[in-house]
Image 1 (cartoon, each protein chain N blue to C red):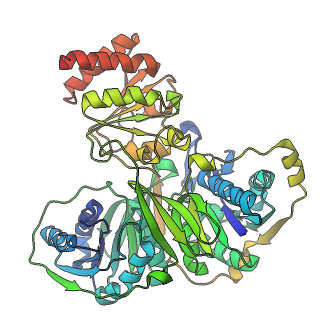
Image 2: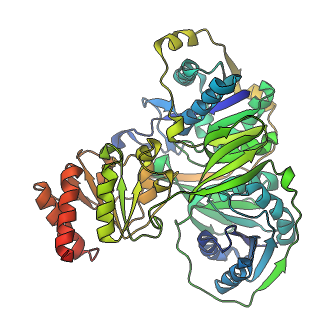
Image 3: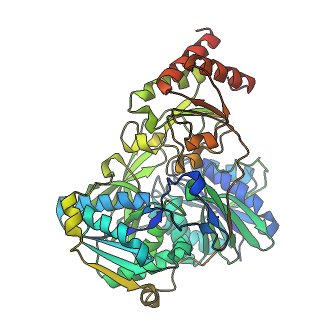
Length: 326
Length: 264
């Protein structure tokens, strides 16, 4: 019987960041006394480097599967490729990133393996023989603690909930696993990948300014962009502006959108009801600007301004310009 | 097209903080006296189904699993929006069940309903947010699966859907029967029922099936049970420091505080 298996993906050519975050979760499970291996799925010349990255972070055995169908969004191809890989690795615990593909793969894998399942985990640890996983519930208002005793166990981990662990290089080895996948037989198949023009690296930015329903329309975002530009930050949005089509959906921060953990998050015209808070609560400092002093965002903000953003944000822009001497 | 939409009733997620409480006996949100609504993304799923019916014809059946006594409003709304028929699996335990158990019961109900081309549900429930029901239904029904579907792009010849992805979206070709877990989008904002539709909705068929009957036909398939040890409210140690004055003064104060925090 195997140990912990990290489902690492390189579907866009290079190792996904969340794959390394999973290695961190695997380390947290060390008390279980299991070896950590990785299943590496992807295609192209980047796979060698991806395997090396995994070895560099302490993963000894990498089961590598290289196939031209293992590209962005191809969940059914990933499931097909995992069959021979998991037959080889025989893991007791599977860690999957809860990204576009992982969200589809993790539950389906758990069903096929008759495994216990915990999804969207923000923390994973071992407690004697059991795995304890924590996840946000009720739109981020509460935290549920789950205990998984049965094996195998499948856990999907929310991207960016955990840090990439420090390197811990080991002499690893790669086992290449052959798989044949019939493209015509895939029940769902990505025909096209369309990237939206997002503000630069919303998830990497150290300063993020989010706009909400309170902006009243797309024009408000121009002000936010100006402020963000001055502060070297990115602009995002809560759900209502993206649902209304004011800004692209890829700007969305919140449970269905991106989870961010910048040093500074400024929420403008965002009420802070439930889901959005879940996406930003990891920010080090949260500033909220809202006309409503009762807005729930103020219960998570560190600094609050009750006021009209149309007056406050231009004043902020002027102040920051002054500071910068521009 | 025959479409079934799975709807779940939840306590209104926009409930004010003071009304949100966890029942220590069940380790779930207190529902007593709280307003119930259709889970956010389930409404979007219903809208996608209705738009498809408007476009190419067919039938939309809504399926809900929950205490029948509390399901009336959700069913009436769905029928008023344009669904043709409703099935309620009467289950008083539903609020305690996790996604895997629910998917098993829903799958059994779907098998009993007979043939369908598409099953639509929300990408996640507004309360427990596991994001598992769609994919688990697909496994149980041996159907194709796409999650985070924001819209159906094409439906003649091939079924082409748009799936929300981390950096944009994917156009995904799906072969029915398929389960689509739907997310919100500018194209699928739920329609408001007209008064005349609310009236005609009363004549549409609503079937109630006891959960024990449905459970008897449920398979053993799917993931295993996990224990919910507890549900806790996180410690909110941050106390908001409000900056007062006119906008100019507030802005100055904020810049000052950010400089002190070395963020500017």
